[in-house]
Amino acid sequence: MKNVLVVLGLLAGLTGCSTSTVFIVRHAEKVSEADTSSLTTAGLERAQALADRLEDERISLILTTPYRRTQQTAAPLARRLNVPVESYPAQPIGAVVERIQRAKGKNTLVVGHSNTILDIVKGLGAVPTQSQIESGDHDNLFVVTRQKGLFGKSIRLREETYGKPTAP
Image (cartoon, rainbow, N blue to C red; front, top):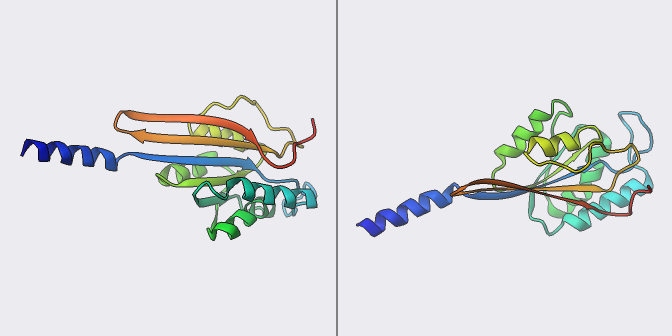
């Protein structure tokens, strides 16, 4: 009987364990500063590069702001994985952070803006090395891995680039 209780306790503890990875990027290169701007040819190529980079990452949730440029950045991956794109408000950051936290155990792509992605990374408990994203910088990929286990939570951040490097 004692062994059964130990096994049941372990099973109960393991059901509370989860690991999720959140991939956070800024939208790809856009035609203009207008809110309705589409991606440039270089931006469309970057969106394809993002799909190439993330296609094997088991992403099951894709979040973008309602702007065309963020949706176009996520579209190639969404089509490739047959995952719908969900919209989140660009502000306040807490809304998207809360949505990510509710997606326990799911790998997620978040496409945001130069003035929001670092705050999203911080909202998830990670500390990026960059203090701001420059207006011409589109190749950053922030990878936040959140692990919840029997002995607490851990958060890891990897900072990568993808696609054609942004000119210095």
